Amino acid sequence: MRKIALLAALSLAASAWAQKPPAAPATPAPTPQEAPKAEIAKSEVKKPARKPNPHRQEDARPCLDKPTNTEIIKCAEVFL
Image (cartoon, rainbow, N blue to C red):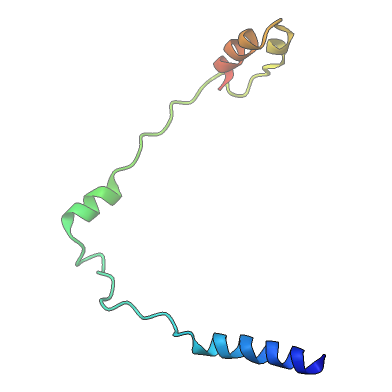
C-alpha cells in the first residue's frame, strides 16, 4: 500500500516539475505617454450618468395589491 502511495506521489511531482513556467511578455505594455491616441480616446469615453428617478426611494408595496402579474410589473416599473 505504501509503494502505491509513493508511486502516485512521485508521478504527480514529476508531472508538475515537467511543466514549463509561463513565458514573460515579449514587449512591455506602453506607458500612458506612449499609448496611441485612439486607445486614449476609447478609454476617455464614458456613459452618461443616469438621470435620477424621484420615485426610486418611494415605497412600491401598493403595486402588490394588483390582481395580475402584468399589472404588478407595470406599476412597479415606475419605481425603477
